[in-house]
Image 1 (cartoon, rainbow, N blue to C red):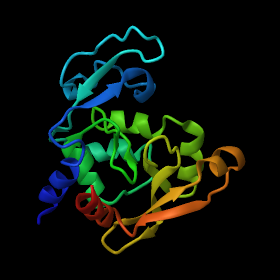
Image 2: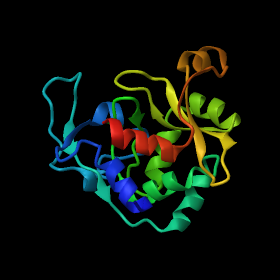
Image 3: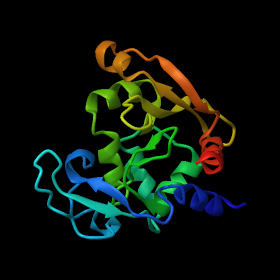
Image 4: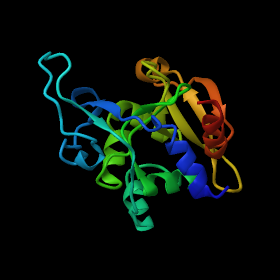
Length: 199
């Protein structure tokens, strides 16, 4: 299986053939405008009468061809390099946040890769603590679990891939301490294979 086929299988787990729901109020970080993500939407925004819900829309992952020099923009703001397979993923696809059962993947919104940087820096305190320890968040726990799922750049293999760890968010936010609550995979590649198998 080629890396392109592997990533297609991974993205295929982002809801399969069904469109997913995106709530503008909860999932768009500061700096990402609703019009920026309109290419992802399967239909226009719906204005919800309930003010606690707000506008929502359905979306599908979008295949793109982002030039690799866009990674320079990412690494001006985010520690790296990130695992090569993840770099390829963010250059090939845009998507909104998606729950894969064992973890959620943070969105890679357009415009490339500015939307991703805005997402990664949305919680500035968390971003500062993680970055200063060579950790880059790319996900969260499943459902409403806020624990960050990160690339541990301190645990890098010869191929440039990194261990994937989950940290206790309360320890970070309340004490600025890192407490690993789980190792999801020895590498991002391993995590992708696991996700394709179990979801």
